[in-house]
Length: 420
Image 1 (cartoon, rainbow, N blue to C red):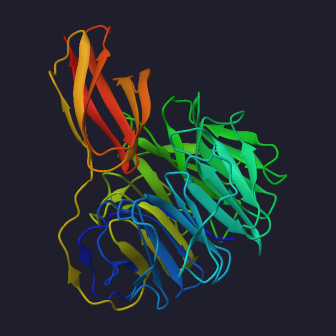
Image 2 (cartoon, helix red, strand yellow):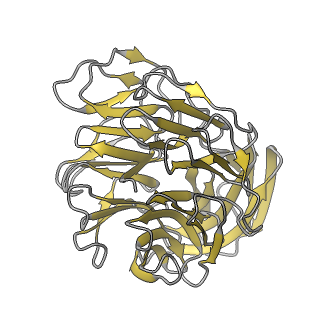
């Protein structure tokens, strides 16, 4: 079982020199991602793997992230997550049906062929115990789990449509007890099972349609304390949700950005969050106030291994430690938004816009009002061929301000619309 703190990371451009206490550093000797490293997994302080999304690459380190070796994987996929049961057996999920297993520590990967066609992507994974691993999907729907209790030799498919529309994250305490998060028709949700995924109970709903509970964390020093990140929609802010009783009750606090995906707390009060347009937002008072550290953008996952050691995935890979790392300056990372042009804006009776897709993608198009209320979900689709695509939808709404929301593989973005 791993303790997760999840940042969707594109951390800033600076690696810091010597510190007298633990701090975040950008690790050298691993390529900058063209989008972000969606996931990292460390089996111990030295042995770890990183999965690059649009970069379609996997890297392995055996020296705590100082050096990385690229692994042999297909180069035409978006890699969403990576997870290992032990130093040899691991799993690699993508945003397509393609799912992979290694039995030699990542040197070679084989396609898992015995999962149902309904598995359109794996957005979250968690290994627990010696032989059990769970996966879930997808952020663009539908909602399901896959489960193996024999180190990935056979897989069980669990339809989760009775509990959620979309799933992003799974986090298990043991082989039978665990949590899942994503969204349903009422908003972002947190679910719990005590029977290995056969049945689930809804613990929490954000109550705002279009939101996701994106990531979950159990605090290592007190596992009754849980945190979750809530990705919201403009003009609303994202949120930190916190439970001190193992998920029975939750408190929600706003975080100063809508597209919040990452959450990671070192103590009950000291932690970090981030999202597609933010880097490490830091709090020392359990989310009452936040400081923008300026360290990059688009955080997704953090894994803590101790009180002074953690790793974070993003535009680069980052390490939280008290090591003396040399200064390394790189160009400040850019937010990898899709190029969207609304024509015209203000709109009249039709909403016309174009989206330039540099690579294959998934897309959810929605309209929200100025209160953050969903007006309509216009379209969900899989983009198989890169290039510019034109969209046109009737816009029979009263005059005023609206937000065009585009949720896609590397994040979410909103464009303000004025209706004449």
